[in-house]
Length: 580
Image 1 (cartoon, rainbow, N blue to C red):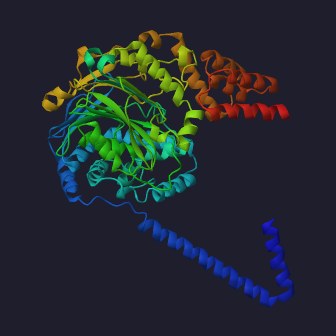
Image 2: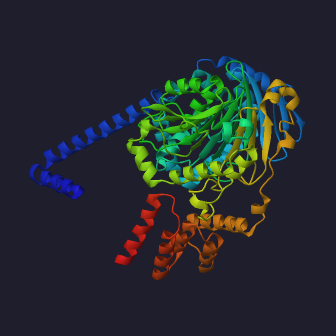
Image 3: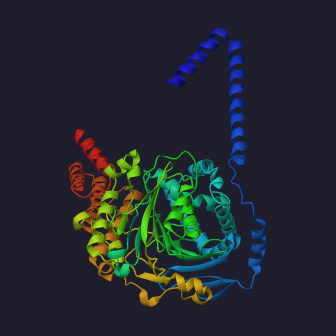
């Protein structure tokens, strides 16, 4: 309509003023074009100057080390899938986990981390970019996404401590240039550390639906502090293929270990030599308007520089983040755990009620400080977080006193509240069969157990941090404590239910890609996971017959649906179809 009006006005001016109007219009259009070109030039200048990511102040040492490391005879293969660089080492253990040890200052650690991970770094970036290609297949849109992220994170380096910038910069020296169309290696790796936060903010403010818990005193065997957590961060099966357990021995702060992936020096789950643990759980946030400190960097700072809950809280208080998060802190020094509940504007500490020797944590706040917070109230009403919190709490009480093995039993639980069968892969379950990793800590004894594939169902392998950090050189190739391994749950992985769930995933992926299933596949997807609402929703979406679609969608509503928004979406589809 506006276009037609403009054409009419131009035509009217031409008729009345003829030659004068034409000259005037040419001048006007010329002015507009010049103005637009000026805007483009201004944007390019701004993008290349104001949006340019700052390098760390100290880079010279890294360059010298890089030159020596590339020809250093100390960097060598010790055995199959086992390398060393000076006193640093990496190897793949018998369970498919990469165990890695690095030491020194930030530049030395970063370079060793990158050089030992070089092939894995390429694989991890390729997997990540393949996921981006699936989500945003158009290369032009990818470039727009790159500009958006870089502009959005233009001040990121102002919020990341210099030590972490140096470490990431040095690590990026080992990255491939095959992905430079997204950004230079340092830019990419820095932005990857904020990907959790940005994705968490944009994916309905909830990318990760994690659950954690802690017991001590009378609720743990021998009174040990026991902590369990599921990290349900999912970027595809290939992304979780090369899981790493990294052991860092920095020149400043405490030695620490964390579960990660190649390229990630931030922390999602870890423990330091003082028996302090950190695990992060996303909470509902308002959409941030700009970057701040990534949560994984905050967790890393706590792990490296805090020895107790009070010190961890002080670090969180002094750090500005741009998404909301719950950080469950376990402390051998304090003999208990507490939860730092941190939003963009406020930070509070939630302790267990008097006389209660346990805590559970999902994705909403529990403390009085956030009782009336709008985002938190809405999250409790509309998400699956309360269901997982209740299930974790019930199991902790039922299985008390907890041992590491009992903690693994809780982390593997696939049922809903009141032990209801809610289908496999349901987000209301503690075990959603998609976790990047699952881990159990015993800070009292400096031991940690890490899950192996598939998801939480494989064996949990044990590491003794006290022994490893005392003699790191002797643990190259044998970081695990074999006799403390918690066995895999073969009763499930050998079952028809597990095979059915794998088929359900295949058919779900096919439907997402092709938006179609055959009539036989529609019946198969329901049979493969008959208690999961998603099976019926997909069956309805794929059905050609109108009545069948309605029946499937109505059956979906009879199942346990994790989020209010998902339920409303199905109800809307039913209403829309019935109105026709």
